[in-house]
Amino acid sequence: MSTAKAYAAISATEPLVATTIERRSVGAHDVLIDIKFAGICHSDIHTVRGEWGPQQYPLAPGHEIAGIVTEVGAEVTRHKVGDRVGVGCMVNSCRECVNCKKGEEQYCLAGNVGTYGAVDRDGTITQGGYSTHVVVTEDFVVNIPDGIELDVAAPLLCAGITTYSPLRHWGAGPGKKVAVVGLGGLGHMAVKLAHAMGAEVTVLSQSLKKQEDGLRLGADDYYATSNPETFEKLAGTFDLIINTVSASIDISSYLQLLALDGALVNVGAPAEPLPVNAFALIGGRRSFAGSMIGGIRETQEMLNFCAEHNLGAEVEVIPAEQINEAYERVMASDVRYRFVIDTATLN
Ligand code: NAP
Ligand code: ZN
Ligand code: ZN
Image 1 (cartoon, rainbow, N blue to C red):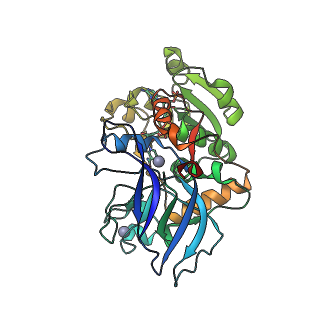
Image 2 (cartoon, rainbow, N blue to C red):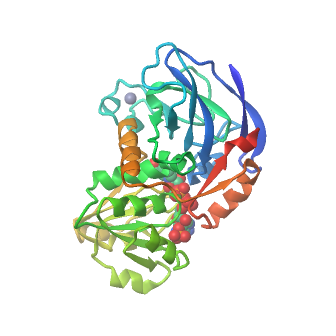
């Protein structure tokens, strides 16, 4: 066992505080990672505030981890000391079920082991990336290509893969019209990735405040959803809509923006239900779907794609003591476009 410095929630209602957590010893198949940067995902906020169910505290969140391997177990073959690596939302799975065998470990039938707040296969409760180091089984550690700096790479481990996977699955590419709802952490990556895949991209944001940014990130069009004319003008337009909004929205009015056979894929995960009017679906043979992160193989594919296309997240690097303030800014949709913690400030 070793002790890591960390920032952790001590209850659902109090600010996060500086603390220490335990990390397991490096086992035969484990790697020890010196964490350099950890992104702040809205899921961290949903989780520590108990919106997705009760948690065990203290809980150090963080599942957008970028760092350097500093030790490897005796049987590790995939990584070596000095490698630039990343860890995303899961650190293990059963590896035997049909979904794990397909490389879709996020849909493990036994439940994947989340990077924080989950019971690991050794019985301990996992603790996340707002921390100085972490021990992870080698199969759930991916390589960060040399072309991507570690700070802009960190958010790719959740925001990147969560948007890359549905864009690929639903065929975003040349000739396809893709809309992205919400220009936050996930949304800005969806815009960059869909643009790099060759799709025509439209941002649907609450206001036009971030329009200039959206167009610079790769969007072709940008509309405010606070303006009812947006919904009239864009009716029947899109092949694919990726909804990244962290709150419950009127899904039916967005379904009306889909072309025949179009799909609205929800990646946003509000605690509240998302009611759907059946006529919004049957009126255009439309689909309403969901998607959760991506498998390990696809996460590596996404990182390689980002390196090839010279893509990273747009980040605001902050010291650990600003985490609580960053949470408030995320809640106010005032993130441009991902907060990333410089973990050196934990020391
Ligand atoms: P974020 O940075 O806070 O972005 C969410 C964006 O949604 C905001 O920037 C805002 O964009 C828009 N928004 C927020 N509240 C809204 C409201 N009441 N009505 C309309 N629009 C609103 O969050 P994130 O980190 O990207 O995460 C987004 C959601 O995805 C969260 O629920 C998170 O838990 C979930 N998530 C899911 C997965 C998965 O595997 N499916 C993975 C990661 C995260 P505008 O200002 O442009 O309107
Ligand atoms: Zn996340
Ligand atoms: Zn499994």
